[in-house]
Amino acid sequence: MSEMEDVKAAEEQTSPATDATSKKEELVGETTEELPPEQIVTETIDEDGDEVEEITQITKKVVKRTMKITETSSTTKTSSLTAPAKLYGKDLSEYDDVDVETLLAQLSPEEINILAKEVDPDDNFLPPDQRCSYECTKDPTGPLNRKKLIEHINKQAIETPDQPEFEPYVKGTVRGKKWVPPPRDQRDVEAEEKIAIDLGDEYESALKDATQEEIIDLAAILGFHSMMNQDQYHASLLNKGQPVGMGWDGITKSTQQKVYPMDPPNDTDVEESIRRVKDDDEKLIDLNLNNIKNISEEKLEQLINALPGNEHLEVLSLTNVGLTDKLALLLAEAIEKSKTLRVLNVETNFISPPVIVKLVQALLKCRTIEEFRASNQRSQVLGNKIEMEITDLVEKNTSLLRLGLHLEFNDARHRVAAHLQRNIDRIRKDLDLRLQFRFFNNLHRNPTRVQ
Image (cartoon, rainbow, N blue to C red; front, side, top):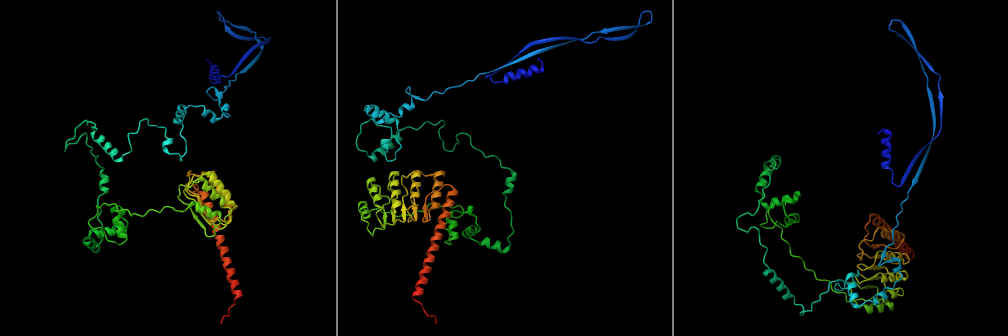
């Protein structure tokens, strides 16, 4: 096979299967042309020894052929059609108009139980026994007795035989292969050898006569933390004296924890507080409903609806009261109409990040709120998009001084912190100007003569 044929064969192997090219050659015409004859004279010697000239006449013909080459190309296209997703022989779009309540009403109780076992509702307010698909079919044997249950578990554990050992235990013998450490490199051993340092007679005598506690104090002062435990180190720094009998091999024992009394429960009367907010009680300035778990949504909604008409409430704390997105949106509308609210705290609730943005946006219309806290919600991470929206809204707010939100990205944290600091500086300058104006005004009204 020639080189040209090899190239063509390689091209045919690498060409796609969808493209096919064919060539067809056809003879169109042929002409013949004779060239003038040529004579070649050669001198030779015959048998008699005489020189003889031989004349050779050469006649040449040139044949010219005209060929027609026809190239045919064909392309085959292959297209694959993807069938739409189907469920029980129908397209998914046909189920958009189906009424789910009607379908559930047609199911029997057994079919509903089977469906409930396959569905896990993502609702933290449901108790675990309603979310778990496990159902115990056994009848209860009686009320739970925790003491008897533990005794039964311990008895069952004692009566259960241990798994037999492949080699019984014998005191003083080693079962299996004993681990032997590999020999150390001589260079490492030499590097760890002690180096003799000449400290002089004065230091040598002082260290020779020093007690172990004094040497431990000296090591703590020099910063040798790995040579002692925490009790010895802090005793040396605070000059309390070393613990007796601990030495270099002492082990720090756990200290007894300090028991602090638990915070008393919040005994604020919710209904009375809502009534006072509705009546615009001038003595109600700070309302704290933190950690009250049994507040219903109706009561919270009544409280939020009463906020726009109140002109004396300044601090509102709703931490860990089960505030949802629905109530938070109502709170955002109430904030826009509030005239005296300065501090709002809604930490540790169930507010989603987009609703937090709505609350921050409502602060732009309410120019009285100076502190807003909404951290520790159900979604711990807000996301870059939400944090940038909050940052843009905070930079437009000229009255906000403190913001309680966990921002993950450095850009958002730095921009918010810088803007809040500018608000604080501007308010401090305004306060200084007001004090100076009041001072000079009083001085002008009551001039004093300097002796």
